[in-house]
Length: 198
Image 1: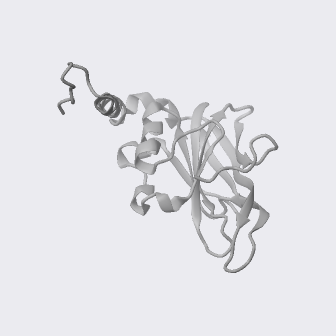
Image 2: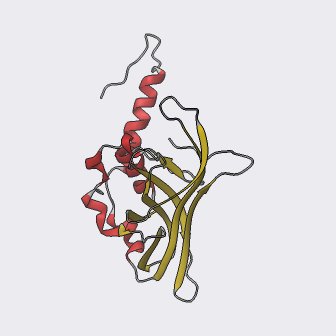
Image 3: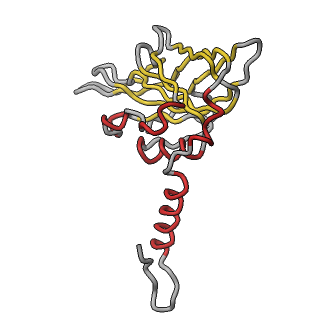
């Protein structure tokens, strides 16, 4: 694509940004199996839980808003363990509109087109997928040590409707005695206030 150039010979800011985005997509979009082979195993049993602990303000028709503590889990919903690589982060950002942050990212799933929940086929072999138990726990077998991303569907906070949200958080797997634990918890604290739902 030709770049927009000002009469002075300088590119516009928009053209520079577009060029950078295209360059990033060219580098990260193709899946490289060799760069992800480390995640195929053998490895340890990884267990963990997914939980969002937040104060949630609800308003109902004709009534004052109320703030209640909500503990949301992935009980009965899909959870994924994804190798934390530049390609996978790019996939989450572009296909799912889910940026990866160290503290975790909680998104209203209505912002994600439903067909896009299916993971792209070219990299599916290195992505582990399961279903959380009744307490929001998950378990994956044969996971090598390394950096991963946990992506899970969680119950939505609205009490008046059944909705499903998405949470993504980086975790580090370091097995001790053949087992590892990966906790995914987003929680209020006095400094940051409520967990932000995007």
